[in-house]
Amino acid sequence: MPDFPPTPPNLFIDGSGYVLTFAEEFSGTPEYYMGHGTGSIWTTSYAPHLHDGRWAQANTEGQFFVDPDMVDLPNAFDVADGALSIKASALSAEQQVLADGQLYSSGILTTELSFSASSGYVEIRADVPDEVGFLSAFFLLPADGDWSAEIDVFEILGDDTDTAFTNVWNDGVGDVEAVTVTGLGDGYHTYGLRWTDEMIQWFIDGELVRQEANTVTEDMYLATALIVDSEWTGSPDSTTDFNDGLRIDYIHVYELESDPNRNDAIGDATAFVPIPYGNGDLGGTLFGTRWGDVIDGLAGDDVLYGRGGADQLWGGEGTDTLFGQSGADALNGGAGRDKLVGGDGDDTLIGGAGTDHLWGGSYSAASGNDTFVFSIGDGMDFVHDFNALTDRIDLSGYEVDMTLLSAHLHDRGWAVEINLSGIGGDSGDRVFLIGVELADLSVGNFDFDLLI
Image 1: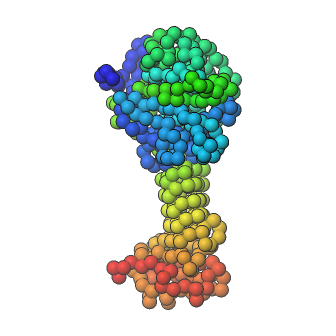
Image 2 (image 1 turned 180 degrees about the vertical axis):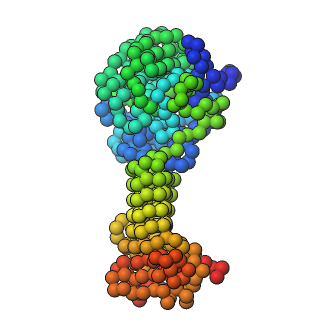
């Protein structure tokens, strides 16, 4: 592959200065999204933290978008010679079961959880496959997760690679225009979109091919995919070469330098920093993925769901509710009146300051070997499902052993009270193990500082 000059950090279009804010050169393995807090860029499904969509059902698509770590399904992604290939595969009967009954696998890349913009110049350099049953696409979708708008930079059918379909959608109504450019299936071509407050312009190989008044005024993220076996594409046939994939050399975004709301400028792809998943200080509901996530609710009243994987959830300030769900999770409520529910797996729960209510399992005991951690200044906490056979109380933040602690354990009939103020805690520091009798507890239920 020939050497190309470095990606310019600045562009001038019609006399206006633009700065590079996103760059993917595909010179190495892409940063595939595998959990919040990992600093990754490319999600390989729609909304992996919500419905985790693997195909667009409304389009009757026949592919299942795979993640790179789905080892029992064909790998859809390959990087070679400075370009990424997205390849489709026909699935065996056994693989179709793993793919929710879909007949084919393929790939999608989106910046749904890492980058979005509300204007600018977007460009992709791609080589599209000319195979029956395939559709190559590069498009923009709303960052807030609804389908109030969509901009299709290009959609190219594998059996008609002399036509690029451009489109802009508003509230489910499209305005499609087919652009004829001979030979789009022969080698690499550039596809650009200039999006301003006033207009949207489409470019192919630097030539303006369409212009419309702008109707899209919200943040949009990037997506590119190889779609297979839809009502529009038709099915692959005996001529379809599944080794012919969608090859992408780069994807760049430039934003108007004078725009006060633009993303930070970068010098090159290595300087790009993904937007962290979160909701700021206003509170809200956040969802994890099937991987191990790191989610910080910050200030505000939050509801956090870890979903799969070994998650780390921080409620921060405010009245928070944390659900670890499946996996060995670590939950920290932070300051405020919080509710922590570990779910399945061996979980660690820290209520933090304030009056907190803790469940190691899913509102019942015997959902794992759970550890409840208490420190000086945590206030009054209630553990609702402590299992004396499997769970532990971590008091390593106190200078205490079982002999000293025993005098401050009280059976109240409805619960065992641990009076932490009597062993060095603040006034009001105490824990109630609801439904537990003092006779149920032993030294094995407590973790102490071994240096005492």
